Image (tube, rainbow, N blue to C red):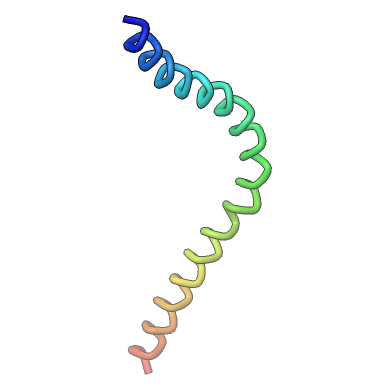
Length: 60
């Protein structure tokens, strides 16, 4: 019984720690997310530019 309880506590402690880390993580992630958002936006813009270039080639 003691062994089973120990095993049950280990996995239970992991999710508990994750929850605690999850609270500060989002707060800290908010800062890196700001610079991260423009990066994907730039990639989308580059894709749009490529599409426009293809259209331009098709027009002439």
